[in-house]
Image 1 (cartoon, rainbow, N blue to C red):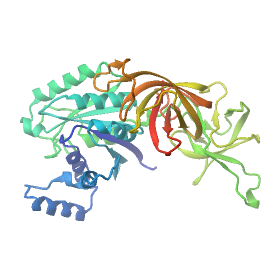
Image 2 (image 1 turned 45 degrees about the horizontal axis):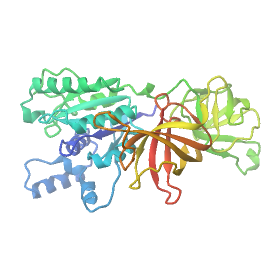
Image 3 (image 1 turned 180 degrees about the vertical axis):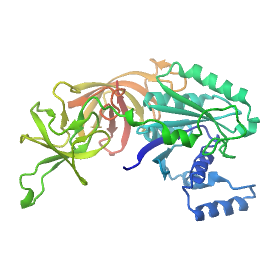
Length: 415
């Protein structure tokens, strides 16, 4: 049995201990090499710091950022016997909203750091709003620097209450609070004896055990075709498979399916993988599906169930996060990418801009600049097979591309 992969994103304001926390997780879970630790130890001594500054494990990229080399999102990998982890570490500043959206778009869990001295600040609210907008299933509020507040339970309870009051307005369903000290290691990997009043799990225990199996949509079968497999080989001259990643539902051998846009139906004859044949496939598996009938299918088509189809539409409403220095153009034309399908689109209407700090809808100022989030209407050159983003994060998301520069200029969530 391969161990399950959990993706999480870390967010917080500057200096609230993100680097130290990631360093502590890597160090205490024995996911760094001895020489890396020694290098950090030497660097800490050279800087005249007491003890080992674990933040230096992840701060190598900061120097590059300061030299103007943009690193959108730094990904780190580590594993424990229970799970493998991918951390998307995104910068905290307001001008990096787009980076947070990129890092968080595939995450199962968002860790939001709160400095126990400062409590819930504007950045905390912003990150929670983005996490709810991106429908990240699990949110962990790490109340850090408890060591500087004498591990006081009242401080923890106050911050928890403030956050809960704010989050009641958001679409977040699973919020967990953990009081920690990333510097001292309290409740990160090991339980803290300084906070006997806290009865919850440590952060690592939470990450290893949070149930993510149902984060995917296992109800609506969606299989965007990425590639048609026709081997030039005499042994396989009858082979015609459709390769792609299952975006929703469970697909089984013998299931009756329908292909879009043609509307033709067939039956799944076989599900192939590099490791051999499977009886069923579900998200996020990558497989090759073979059908009983010879239907003309190409990249961008979708295999679904006859009585459960996405909406095929050219008119789409999006919540859009804008990534580019040039503002979004009303009546502007962009290339659009949705699952494995490419098209072009026209921006028909900018309905409002959202204030990412207060959730206020700005109906007056409709200039959508870099890092802004807005609700817009687009029309595409051909129908796309979409689901609402809250129903399926894969079939409910699109990216917009500037045709002149080929840059990704925006990421949208289908409403």
